[in-house]
Amino acid sequence: MKKVILIKNGELVLKGLNRSTFEDMLIKNMRRRLSDLGKFNFIKAQSTIIAEPEDEDVDFDEAVDRVSRIFGIVAFSVAAVAEKELGKIEECVMEFLGDELRAVRTFKVNAKRSDKKFMYKSPEICREVGGYILSKIPALRVDVHNPELTVTVEVRDRHVFVHGNQLKGAGGMPVGSSGRAALLLSGGIDSPVAGYMMAKRGLILTAVHFAAPPYTSPRAELKVKKLAALVARYSGRINLAVVPFTEIQEHIKDNCPEELFTIIMRRLMMKIALRIAKNDKCQALITGESLGQVASQTIGAIACTDAVATMPVFRPCIGMDKEEIISVARKIGTFETSLEPYEDCCTVFTPKHPRTRPTLELIEQAESRVDFEEMLSRAVSETRFCSIDG
Ligand code: ATP
Ligand code: MG
Image 1: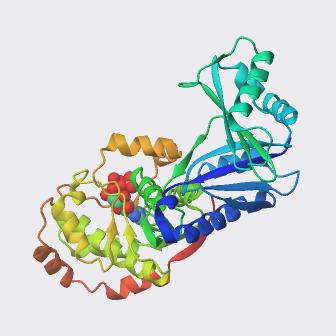
Image 2: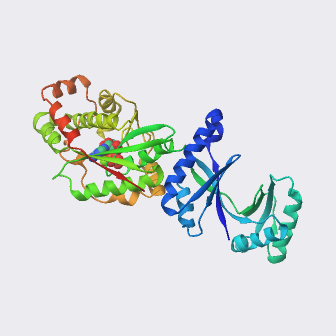
Image 3: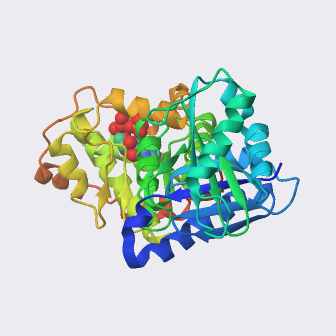
């Protein structure tokens, strides 16, 4: 049985003149994300994109699974292709949806006829196909208002598509339609969620991770790579930059007041991330901060970190409770990995009593006593890059 994926694109529909550009971007993303599974044709047809495998041996189930994680798709269905003949359509319905039909109590048939030359009109298709299904599975009941399963028969120019209930897509906008941004990716729960949320708004991700060996272990870095790969299942390929941060951290510890350690460290992280971001053509930074979660995430502390930012800083988790962030982490499959217990550079040298209401003046004063510039440049130049696929 030949199958296709019917894709309904989301907000794209709202974009008026941009719609075609957005659709092309979505198709480009799908083509790339399915490329290793075999060759697919993508056909635009009104508000639907048809993904049709060209060869017999494509891994169709894997393709469906991947499509469910591609942003810019509101809903999709897996459809069987039938010949344009009523008897063939009926056979196809039973072959393709028989098991699903046997598992429910109520159904209805919904027909769409874009080929007006087809000899049966929509109500006739519904009646005929519905009657056929009932003759095969007499225990079923038709419920036109609230059926458990809707059998859709779409009669198009070249083929007829048969499918069951639509599946929910990943939503959002095609990755790339909003540009590129740099995600500060720790090994924690929040930052992978932040990356997922902003990729959903159409951003390509560059990830920046700060490592502080030997205080942080190679396994911590592996964990971050694993997290990046999990996020990349949604965002597509991620450029990951791993920044050596030990020298800077030791320098802060030895030269700055302990209570300001965290804020100064975060400001220096931002400065480095900004340079890497700029080199990688990013237009914004993304962090997983949530207001009030820890001392470095109070309004005052965020104001102090933002004071060094020369690009917008997106914080999609800012208004979310930990519980809400965790539920997204579970949904996207990063939660378990985030729980692996490896030290993050942020928890190295944590002060006992961090200041929750730092003043910018105090911080700038403390920073001015140390010359960080050379160390910052060194950290940037010694940064290692790799690209991570989902
Ligand atoms: P997460 O769960 O994402 O680690 P968190 O609640 O532990 O967040 P912090 O450790 O204070 O919060 O970090 C706040 C944000 O700073 C993180 O969400 C992330 O964006 C960034 N960040 C923290 N540590 C690192 C790191 N080692 N490398 C890159 N970014 C980091
Ligand atoms: Mg963290």
